[in-house]
Image (cartoon, rainbow, N blue to C red; front, side, top):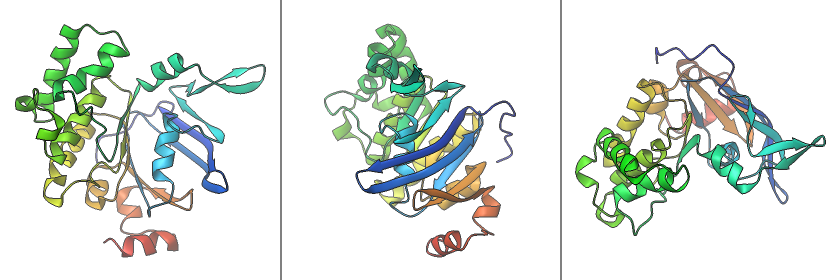
Length: 260
């Protein structure tokens, strides 16, 4: 990408993120800064910690150690008498509203139409009027190519259409940061492109994005930086043409040899 990232302080800063599930030490001290308008693609084998890292950013999982900071504000925690303690649920929900997340399996409300799925969070979390939310949702569905599917239920949509509704739903909260967790992994190959096209346009529009993906062509063409993870650590990172075509670490070389 030729779109320059911001040179200001990082929009997102991850400092020493560890995550343990019992004896399973999934993340082992991840440090990562992401600038405003930057697109960062996380690549690596299954089980390398990519999904867990995304979930720690917005505190769907609470880091065992370390901090996530968005625009200088500590996420999910605050300091009380020298100790970090969890934010109350309402304040955590307010923080999360600044971070959009698109999951592998859509997570749409099956009993709500596409339009109703998109207006749910703005009306319920932010108190936006239904009229305003509907206007925004209508424009977002148009933006993702689904203007004619506003009244369709998820069961009436293809996988690619569901994922595009999920993207519109995340965008409805006007997030500062978008997280994508393998957004095309559950899709049939012939419809992967329609989701990636929407993501490409978001990147071109300047959305800050952290994307866990196995789509190497997308990473090569769209990312400002590619981060290779394995064993819960960042092994290597850099511009796509460096990491994907001339990796320096043997673990990266072995992983890419199976894909490229």
